Image (cartoon, rainbow, N blue to C red):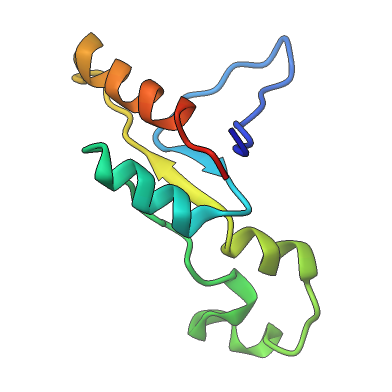
Amino acid sequence: PNIILPEVAEPEAHVWHLFVVRSSNRDALVKHLSEHGVQTQVHYPIAPHKQQAYKEFSHLSLPLTEQLQNEVLSLPMSPYLSEQERNVVVDAVNSFEA
C-alpha cells in the first residue's frame, strides 16, 4: 500500500500516544478504512504556521509542512485493542490500493 509508517532510529525508543501514518491518498485511505470498520482521525489538519495561534508566521512558505497536513492520519492504537481488532486494522491497511 501507498502508506509511510513512522520510523524510530535505533537504538532510540518511542512512547507512542498516536500512531500517525502518511499517505498521498489520505482521503481515499480514510474512506477505505471506514468501509472496513476502522476509525481514523486527522489530528493535525492545519499546518502550524497556518493556525490562528501562529498567524504571525502565516506568510511563510513551508511546502513540506503544507504537504504533510494533507497526508497525515492517525490509526487506532491502544493497549486495550484486542488481537482481533489489531488484525482488522492491519488487514484493512494492507488491502488498500491507492
